[in-house]
Length: 184
Image (cartoon, rainbow, N blue to C red; front, side, top):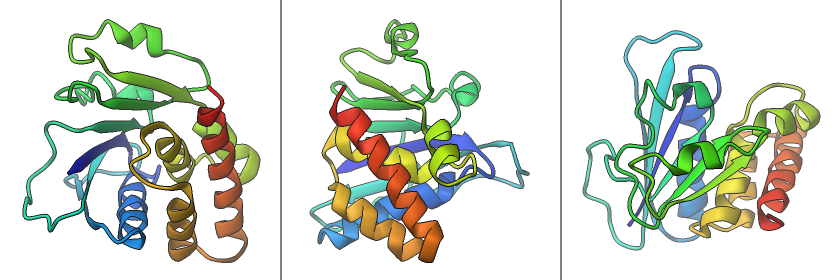
């Protein structure tokens, strides 16, 4: 089972990202589960969502404490949300940042033997979508980084969730992020 935890802020599409990731897995014939964890937060408050992907039926229903991958949609939540806690040995961390801040975090006690990549997803989203929504963009980077899901499945999931010009803009931004990680 591949487990993903997504951290960000309300309004950034954290919950939608987990949902699209689970749709992508389902499209590949896998079992998937996506769910959020938040209270009565408002726009801008820290939010976390989870996604499990497996070749077998998923019976777990609790939050993910030992993720194989962590996606950080807003780096300001890293410390307050303890976003790096529990990342498995050999896991992945994807950070929405136009600057490579991976060296800043490699010394973190919870990131031993973890691959860290940074992608300016907000900037890519602004350029292609016209809004600072990094969720779909980061899923393209996630596909390239982890190989847990195919980019074609991510694109189909985006088209399932959105339609028309919004879907096409998100797909274009997602492909830019995918290619960016593939060339790193």
